[in-house]
Amino acid sequence: MIHMGFGRIRDEELIMFTEQFPMCFGAGLSIVETLELFLDETRSRSFRKIVKGVLEDIKKGAGLSDSFKKYNRVFSPIYVGFILAGEETGNLDRAFEMIVKYLEGRFEIRRKIRGFLNRIGFVAIVIPGVILLLVKIIFPESIAINLQKGIALQILAQVLLQISNFLITIWKFLLIVVMSFLVVYSACYSTKKGKLIIDRYKLVIPVFGRISKLSLLSRFLRAFALFFRAGGYPLDKGIVVASNVISNIYIRNELAIVQESLKQGYSIAEALKQRKFFPKIMVQAFTIGEATGSDRPLDKLADYWDKEIDYVNATLWNFLCETLSFIFH
Image 1 (cartoon, rainbow, N blue to C red):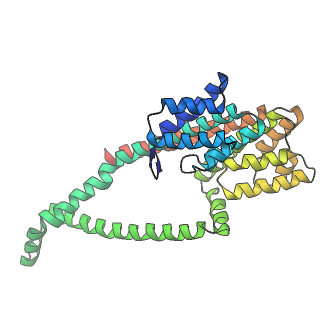
Image 2 (cartoon, rainbow, N blue to C red; image 1 turned 90 degrees about the vertical axis):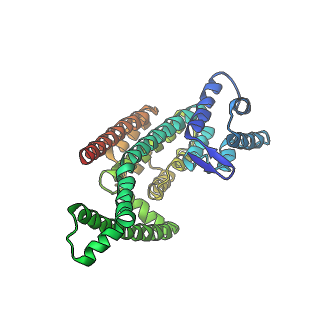
Image 3 (cartoon, helix red, strand yellow; image 1 turned 120 degrees about the vertical axis):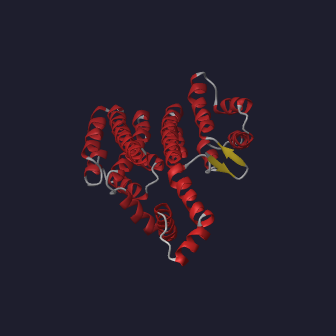
C-alpha cells in the first residue's frame, strides 16, 4: 500500500489504473480521454486528486512522464522510467504492459511476505508476550517469596524465568544492533560514494545478489527493447533513458560506461563485452539483436531470467514455509 500525505493508494488501484492505458489505447482513446475515463470510474478520493493533477498538466502540454514524476510517492522512478522510454519510442502501450507485469510481481511478493509474517507473528510476538506476562505480572511475587525462603522453584517457573530473562536480554541486544545498523546504513547511503559501494555489494550477496542483478538487468532489457523496436533512435541515448528503470547506482554507472563506448563507435555487444559485470548471455543476445535488427533476443532473455527468478523465489519460499512448519509443529 502506498501512503500519501492526503490518503493511501492501494497496490490494486495502481495496477488497475495502469492496465487501463493499453486497453484504452487499443480502443483508439487518447491519453486525456483515458485519464478522464478513470476519473469517472475511480472511487478513491486520493487517487482522483492525483489523476486530476496529472490530467491538468497533460492539458497544459506536459509529457506523461513529467506529470507522473511530480507524484513520486505513487509513481516510482521505475514506473516513470518505463513511461519515458515509451514516450521516446512511441511505444507507450507496450511500456504500460511492462509496468503492469512489474507491479503484479511486486504485489505478489508483498502478499507472500505479509502471509509469512502473519504465520510467524503468533510465535514471534504472542508467545513471548504471554511468557513475559506470566513471569513479570502473574508469578513475580510467588517466585520472589520462594527464592527468599530458599524453596526450590517448580520446573515450570524456572523455565519461564530463564526464558523471560533471555528474551529481555536478547530483545534489548537485537534492538540496539538493528537501530545502530539502520543509522549507519542511512548515513552511508545518503552519500554518493556510500550509495555506490552499498549498491555494489548488494549484488554479490549469495543467492539474493544474483536475483537482484538478474531482475534489474531483465527490467533494463525490456525497456531498451523499446528502442530496438522503434528503429532509428540513437542507442546511446536509449541506454540513458532505459537505465531509468534501474534503481541500483552501480549498474547505472556500468551502463553509463557502455554508453560512452557507443559514442566512440563500438557496437552495444562490444561495449558490453568490455565490462566483466554483464553476463555473457546478455552479450550474445545483443550480438544477435544487432545482427538481425530484432528486439526478440532481448525479450527472450528477459523472459528466461524472469522464469529463473520466479523459480529461485519459489524454492526459497517453499524452504521458508517448510522450515516454519517444522519448527512450529
